[in-house]
Each structure stands twice: as C-alpha cells, then as structure tokens.
Length: 105
Image 1 (cartoon, rainbow, N blue to C red):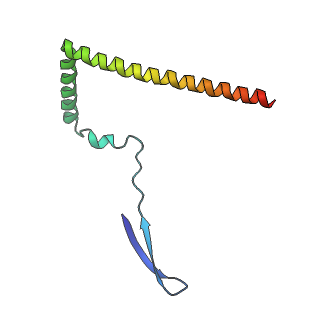
Image 2 (tube, rainbow, N blue to C red):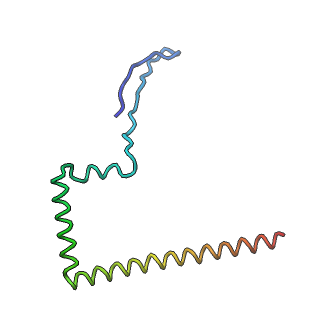
Image 3 (cartoon, rainbow, N blue to C red):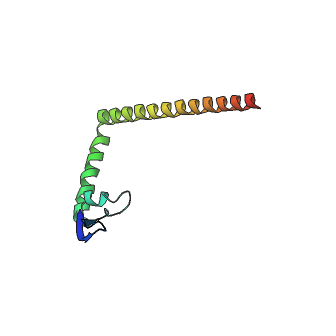
C-alpha cells in the first residue's frame, strides 16, 4: 500500500526515504454490502426468488414455523430480561448517588 515517492538527504547527510500511505476508500458503514449483493437486475431477481421460496417453505411447514417462533420468543425474553437487569442497575447507581449527595450536604 505504501508508495515510495522520493528520497532526500537530511541535514546529517543520511538519505531519508519518504513514503506515502494511501488511505482506504471510505464508502460508509454499509459500503461492503454492494460487494455481496449481485450487480445485475436479473441476478437480484433470482436472489429474491430464492429467498422468497425459502421463507415460503419455512412458513408453510407448521413444525418448523413453531420451532422458529419458539426460538425467537426465547431470544426476545433473554434480551428483555437483560434490559430489565440493566434498568435495575441504573436505578441502584442513581440511588447511591442521591445518598452520597445528601450525606455530603
């Protein structure tokens, strides 16, 4: 990535090589998605068709759909429980700060 631009002599008489480093291209947070998705309209249509067929298959199979929903409910429960625990910890910290402020006053 580094390019040798030119070399110069420093004041001490030694040759110093100046190197320039190119910055990576900045396309934003989601710039890599363009490389993953197909470029042609027909390729995008086929990808949509395959994804739609997969979703249709999963939703039409009762057992698979119930397993998927069960897993989603478990995941949601875990996230909701974690958020509640975080709220409790914040409330405890706020109570401690109020107690410290009232003791200092």
